Amino acid sequence: MTATTLRVTTPAATDIVLTRVFNAPRHLVFDTLTQPDLLKRWFGARGWHLVECEVDLRVGGSWRFVSMGPGNRRMGQGGVYHEVEAPGRLAYTESYDDQWAPGESLVTTVLTEHAGRTTLTSTLRYASPEVRDLVLAAPMERGVGEGYDRLDDVLTSL
Image (cartoon, rainbow, N blue to C red; front, top):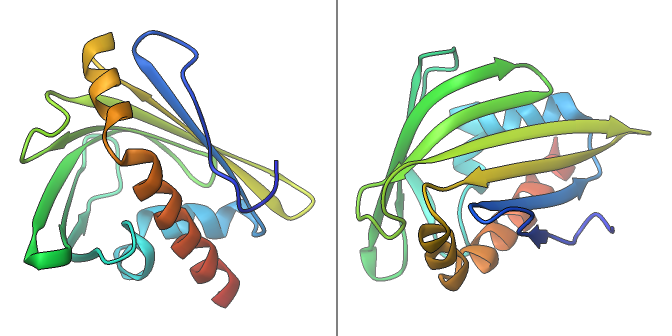
């Protein structure tokens, strides 16, 4: 896999796995996933940006993002951290204000480093195959891919 390719797989009926390699050490990738000043520089698809970004990075701590996009559309999401093991692992719940993906998902992100390159693997687990399929039918893959391209630019600048 090249450093600019997002791979999306569905290894289980309720899961989506997102994998991307970045040309940066994992502590920097972890920081960009967890520090509001860095998240605001990359999070979201092209044309979207975070207008609110709150992170209480501890087990039981919450997070909340509100993004603004084309036409001043807003999208809010948030959840609670279940695991925080810097710089290699995060697990948290995620739900959206507008219910485009109904209910709550569990996201587990693992960062592995080899020779200065970090592989990010996020497993998104949904309540049912139907909800997972709704997410797959949405422009999630494009949005995540564009966000990761923006993240790659931030990592290069760090």
